[in-house]
Image (cartoon, helix red, strand yellow):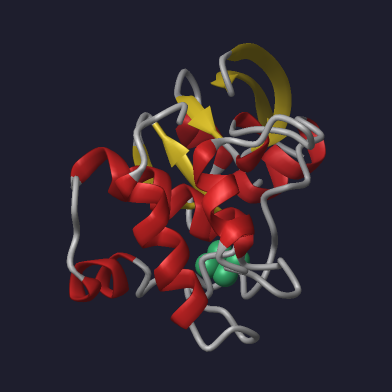
Length: 158
Ligand code: FES
């Protein structure tokens, strides 16, 4: 299988690994980098479960080849917080019950992180528009919108 070694900085740590030319970024992150918090849903760009940040931009990692991320900085959900030391965005989702099964959660967290960077006090419409590419089958979105609102209003590290 044709491939290459690529190097990325993932959650602040430089990592190199081999990938086939056709490997999707989502599979590279989950399998080669052993970071399974990024989920595989539709593999079609529709559900947002595979959302990561690549050089600060939201990317559906099922739509990008891993080789195209060579040299990039990637943030996955593992880069946020961990049990006992949650990121403020994770705290907000916890406080507002912003997930049920949790499958969509990694994508929602990264979208919220990005929105918090861009807008101090987004309207409900702006929040819903930011979430438009990330599907949830459990919550009906009300609690997710509340979680995003809580997350963007609290200062980083609060
Ligand atoms: Fe990438 Fe659904 S798995 S958008």
